[in-house]
Image (cartoon, rainbow, N blue to C red):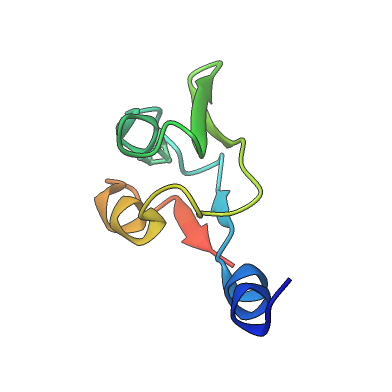
Length: 70
Ligand code: F3S
């Protein structure tokens, strides 16, 4: 892996959903279906990182601020 790829890989944010706050609106799954999946009325993170979508947009779109990036 080249230095640049290594840098990007190491700093790619990972999304986290606070299931206590999630009201199951589904916005995150519709914006980033490769990262979020609805199950039992709650959102679950199914990807290792946010490489395939703009998770920052999703964080701002969640109506109850249940999503954070680490
Ligand atoms: Fe839940 Fe927010 Fe997604 S309410 S379903 S985490 S957009």
